[in-house]
Image (cartoon, rainbow, N blue to C red; front, side):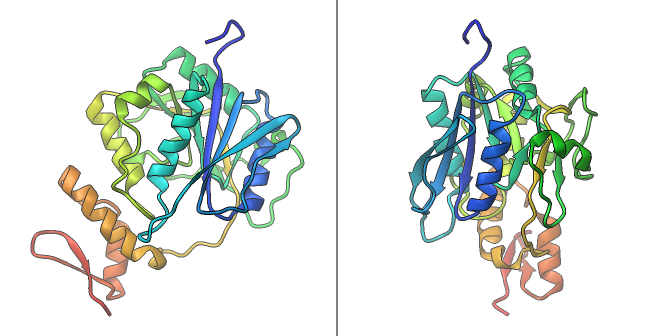
Length: 277
């Protein structure tokens, strides 16, 4: 850590979503505290390249995409390794769809400096379609944090009591805590499971999870399906990985919704398989 404070590295991963990536870049460049390093891990997308915005340089590292799907866990681990190698004291992971609130980087930097042994997560607001802002300070007027996750208030810090609530949209920690966690389990490929796994891993490793009210992010709109039928194969595959590691299946809400549609069935052992219908 320098006399001026901790060095911050922000990591995002992307395939496509170049408009969203540009918006995130701008929000980080114009925030209260600009990160020293900003790295995008491009997953099989050669069109994503380095860029600069208001003095903030975005660098790109590349990772191949296996046949099974996007290597989300491996890509995040690769990005963290990159910013740590560059000397980051604080590692922030931000989903490519998320804009950084005006104080997000400053808040994460302060919290990790105070308690580098913790995993910090900030509230996320899902923005309406066609939302346009010229400056991240304007995002505060749109603040409506997702109700399924804690919101300790703008100046609050709250310890999490449920590791299943961890999500990778926006979080931060120190290199030492990340090493203790071992990063995301790279057995997860494609959509689903790796976030909950990291929450359980943190609990098992004794890394406390905390919610940080000032680290607010804003998720840019994109079409979604519910349940995510297009990810059914990955959810079944990753769910089985999780069940092998933790003795129970994650994403049961989605699996039950698939079951109602006749797409999956329960097995006698308590697992789930596709019906082929």
